[in-house]
Image: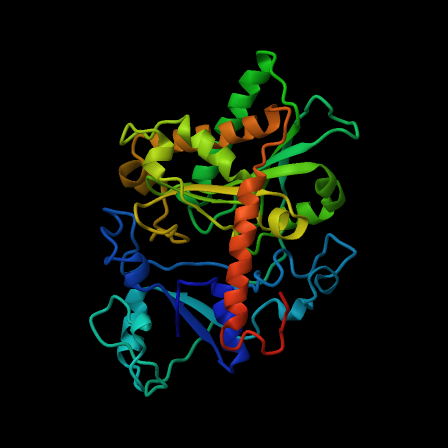
Length: 405
């Protein structure tokens, strides 16, 4: 029995499997994204008693994308160093709402859980084992389905020549259930960005760099579409792509959450300073505060950033104080009905998300000098080195994976 949060669900399953678990139940605790955070569905953005978070349990942190690599002559072992069979669980895995998990948690015996393990339910959490016995049965339909990416090209001034460079925009369009926030809010923003660029082109504007606007498929099953596209065109992208701007969840709240490569932080803050937050009336940069997190994995920027090395940005509006989470994530409650009643009734933040995304893309593609900021990169590298040194000094880091700095 594991709880959502802190790390990717696939890592939880992988760690449990390696330590002998026969099955894994993953539940959403109200302390993380339920009633302790605020109003739950249908009155707010937080997970109700019956809310189940779906999601892929593939070990995507080791190697994202189609584990069989059916589109490539190279295997996952060739590309990532892991065999196909080592990238998917070998044990049953089942997501569960906190309402369904509560009776199981109440019946757990054993030692008291550490303070950090205590959740939002009104009883002391235990570590087990038993004394209750849980039988897990998973019924899955295994089918091969075709997926496809759709990319539009806006030719730059040097399109088709060796001097051409590219700015990429991407959003996935597949969803768990209805997907009003994830990904359809981002898809609607992407369509508006494309319309805006089309209007500029009709007025005679042309970007300095070629722009590619891509709708990815199969993201929820393990970043399938974007990874396949990135690996297929890796040589060209490595030579020509200067930045990638991702929008997965455009709107699930009103607080801007940004992840970015250090070289693009200045560009993001400048763009935010020129836009207005619709609720406060303040410049978006002031309302947001300018905090930018480090990107890792988790959405379609992964192949571009982690494999090819393209500086990337990920943008979203999430509930206030949520630290990037929201309670309707990957559930049946992430619906258009909720969005138009509670999430963004006037669709002001959808419009703002499109403006921010479009402005970043146009500035990155339209200016003659590539938008990077080396001093920020230098500062981040020094910080990363300090964090690595702390990790190396920590307990257990060198067990089979020693490194020198």
